[in-house]
Amino acid sequence: MKNSRYVFDATAANFQTLVLENSAKGPVLVHYWSPRAGPCMILMPRLIRLADEYSGKFLLVMLNTDELGRLARDFGVTSVPTVKFFRHGQVVHTIHGAEPDTEFRTILDKFVARESDRAQSIALRAYQGGDIERACTLLAKAAMDDPANPRIPADLAKLLMLRGDYAQAEDLLRFLPDEVRDDTEIRTLLAHVGFLRVAQDAPDLESLEQAVAADPGNSEARYQISAIKLVGDDYEGAMDQLLEIVRRDRPFRDDAGRRGLVAVFQILAGERDDLVARYRSLLAEAMN
Image (tube, rainbow, N blue to C red; front, side, top):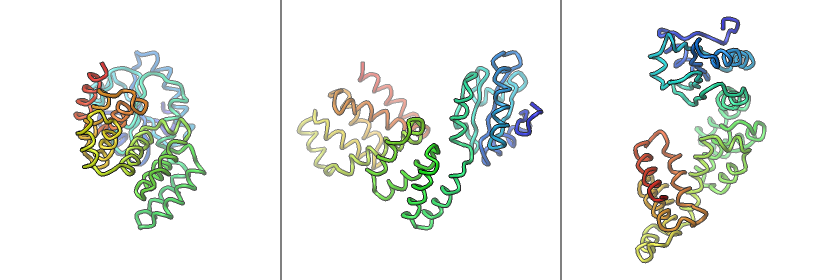
């Protein structure tokens, strides 16, 4: 471990600075390991080689769970090897087991600094200065220059959505490479812009509610109500309508009720976990 300048040993005293504070500057990987576990000893040199390969774009921290069991448990580690990716003081990804190097590279590339990040920063400053058109132009160029950077299309889609260009934002996200489109933030944005487009084209809420009152099986009206309520941050109201579509009309729009609920779960993930858990249970009941 001492052969690399980018690899450090964790202690109870240095964890706050070494991991949490340093993660504000860039990604920090913590390898939770035990000298008694063979897979840990196989993974360790591979991670060290990756740290050298990335030349300081991330820090690698080794945490011996035999010595620091409580610190490991504080972060939910129950088996080794486990590698947690820290950014801005939070765990942003976890890999359990000795996964292939390609898996680690895929996740790392989402968080390490890239050349296109500079263009992204300039674009965001333009937006903060009120020049949304220039911001969009800069981000569009950055996305073309570095199509594998998921942060660029995510920010561009957000700006397009703020500008009301929902169709353009949806097309941008939908036609990203598979590995980029599978990013959690991209999937959530794609779900959100889909609802925005439905809400944008929908009749007024009062007319839709009257249509459902006259015909409770009107799935199209229910779906439009759910979109309007979601855009208005009425998540329970939106999910109630989607759940009713699942109960009454599963084939509607290729299972749009269930898929819509899953999309809302993604939007709310980490913020309203209690609400998500309740509606996940209700969805399971409706499907059985």
